[in-house]
Length: 113
Image 1 (spheres, rainbow, N blue to C red):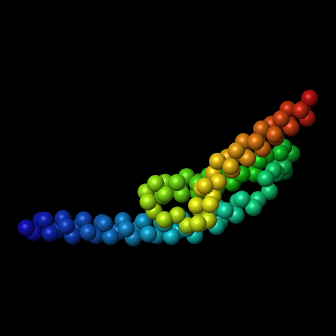
Image 2: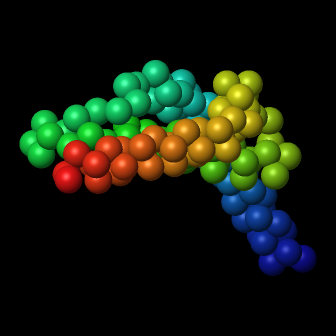
Image 3: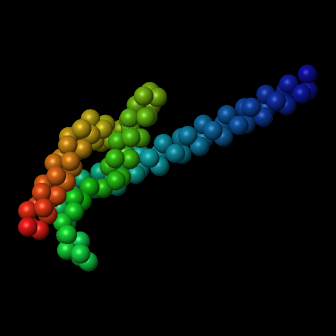
């Protein structure tokens, strides 16, 4: 009937729009991978210019890249090799962050005495 054709056309139009959006989002994500990976080249410990304290310089974009790569991997979507390498080293990055944070807190504790 006429109503069924109209619904099918609307469904197909929405499906095309969603597929187009998904493709554009994925391309933007792939383009942002190198920007996020650049955070791995940053200095690990930095001194804040105002208070002079030392902080671990870990870019939150790396954690976001890891989360997004894991989600896409679970959905069966191809993960580019640079993102896959970061994703597979997530536990190592988190452990290094925790170790550096502990070392800095101990440093602060000792130097404050």
